[in-house]
Image 1 (cartoon, rainbow, N blue to C red):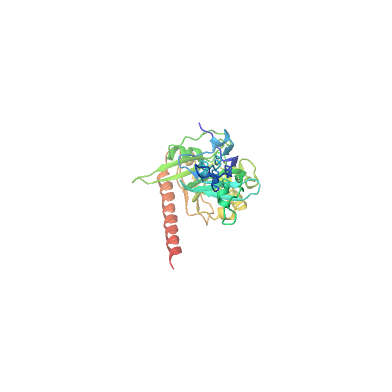
Image 2 (cartoon, rainbow, N blue to C red):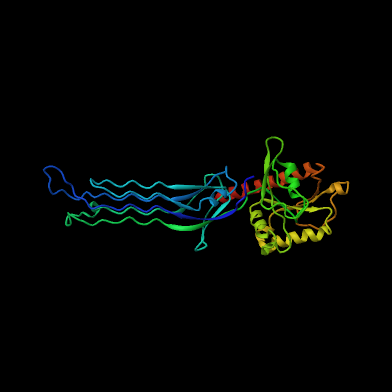
Length: 341
């Protein structure tokens, strides 16, 4: 199984520009020709580009140095040197690119084909033909090529999913994902079975589908990095809705729900405002599908299911889809209003 790698550091270098040249025409019957030194070619650039075929940054753990080609030097007869080839580094959509030294965010790859320049190549130097003037007809000046930009960048992948399954270890997230999609996350009866996020595509009728993320379990203090804390919280930042999973055999349903909400609010107020619902799991233990009483006034719904018994799934998935449609329509209206005069 491919490892999930969500943060790497790599060194990137734009190609150096080629130098210009000092040269003079030497032709038959023209012993003292004018300057004809050409310019150097520019160095290649380094880009990061989104590729929807990728789901991990694993390749960059095998190679951490990338340098674009340098430009060729200029030559006589006013010939400009060949420019260096660019390098394009493919990454999964959802990748943030950051300069390690300064902490500056260079850009964010959100969709397939999105491209960010991370290391610009150096400019080619001018040859002596560039410096010729009516009063300075035989210049010998030329310029060296500029060095390309070199920096260490951090690539950080944040999953993009429609629904994020939120819950403590063994809340039933992985079991639910395995039942509603073709994903095969690791499932066991001990905490932190899920050590990295899993994505699954949930198919519905009429060619409808949405993406669900099963995230590592959250515990008290997760916003401070306890357990798998920050790894968990980074990956739910991009989900459109959250589903708080609470196993019906939990000691106190209200305390568990309030604890999950508190951890998310402590990490990010924006994340806490993400639409969410409550889903009680393992309802087969009670032999019914009526959700237990819980105080969750901000939730758009409270549901109950048994993933193992395949019970209550249609209602929950239908609720997910309905909410996603509402959010999509609201986004379209907002976009339309933004372009109005």
